[in-house]
Image (cartoon, one colour):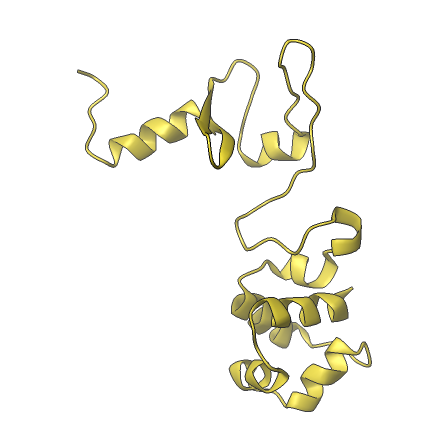
Length: 140
């Protein structure tokens, strides 16, 4: 898995093996061996690679594009799978997403839309915090 991830991330970021090697202070041959699954990087090199590619260490090592169908997401971005819309428009937010974003029964979520980009669901507290940072007073 890591060999495929390293090769994919390098290509996505338009790096040569030499550029990767220079960035993390290893030889080009080491990078080639990692990408060809002849060896694996040590933990220090993995940490540097994750930082270079802006991905989590876990995703660098364990992510499977084959299983998910999408490339490794950048750090802080998540793909939770798909949901099915019910007859009345209801969806079930995946458990992992609810836990990560602290969404609980009774919470208010805002549904936002952009005709070009699609629909977004934002926790009400997060939008109020964001808008408050813009100098908008919600107490008026």
